[in-house]
Length: 70
Image 1 (spheres, one colour):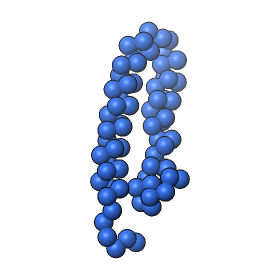
Image 2 (image 1 turned 90 degrees about the vertical axis):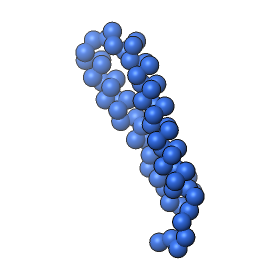
Image 3 (image 1 turned 45 degrees about the vertical axis):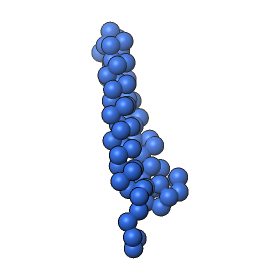
Image 4 (image 1 turned 180 degrees about the vertical axis):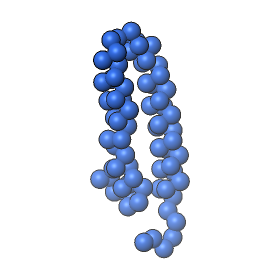
């Protein structure tokens, strides 16, 4: 438990929101090429893209709490 507030939490939240917005815009931009594919491919691609942003999230949250990456 921390005694004093840390700058990493508000900066981390702003960074996370910014990164998610950029990621969402990139997926929307790429969707113009993805949209022409077969529905089976669309399902797989959007499932992968929908889960891919979670991969670095654990390390990012650890950094916000402890200051160490991972």
